[in-house]
Image (tube, rainbow over all chains, first blue to last red; front, side, top):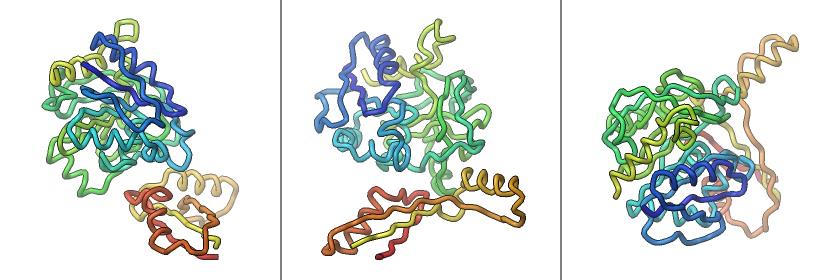
Length: 221
Length: 76
C-alpha cells in the first residue's frame, strides 16, 4: 500500500509513523512537505503526524490546517482516501473541519506522557477492524491539549453513528465522554490523541498500535 | 486602519486555564474572584479599504475557532 506522511515545521512523530508504516506495509511512505500543493497519486493512506506544527501558534494545528498541502489532503479525504491524524494530526483535522469538535487544554493542565488504557468503541471501521469492540489496549499519549470538546448534540450524533473509535479507559485529560478518537461520517478519516505508531513491536512494550495499521492494510488493500 | 479582535471561549466551554488563574488569584489572597475566562486579543493594521466582510472572514477562517470561540471586532 502506498502511503504518505505530511511533514510540518515542528512535526516530531513523522519518523515514528514512517517507521510504523514501512514496517507494516513493506514500503517506505512518501514524506510530503507542508508547502507542497500536490500529493502522490494512488495513496492508500495519508498520515498527519504528532508534534507541534508551527510551534502550536494561535491554536494547536490551526496554522497547519491552512497550509497548502492540507488543502490537497482535504480534497483527497473528500474523495474517500483514508486519512489518519495522530495527536497534533488530530488537532489539525478538527481545525480543517474534516472532524467535528476541538481539542482543548488538558483539564488537569498537565502535559500527560505515558501509556494509557484505551477501549475500542467501534470495531467496524477500516481503522479498527483488527480489534474487538470493547477490547482494552495500552497505547502511549504525549499531549498538553487533548481534551476533546464538542457540543452535546454533536457528541450524541457521533455516538449514534458509531463514529467514536476509541475512548480512554481512564479519563486522563477531561475529554467529553472520554473520547480519544473519532471518525468522519464517511468513516475514512480518523483522528486520535494516543500514538499507535509508538506501540508496534515488542521493544515498545507491545504491538497494540501495530494492529491498527495491519487492520487498515487488510481493509484497504 | 487598526483593528482589535477579541476572541473568547463560548459559554459552556470549560476553560482549565481560566480556572488555574482563578485559583492562583485566590492563592495570592484576592477573595471573591468567582470566575476567570482566558481569551486572546489580536491587533491588526489593515488597509482602510478592507471590507467588514473580509474582516469577518479573517476571524472565521483563522483567528477564532468558532467551534469553541466567539469573536468581536473593534475598529480603533
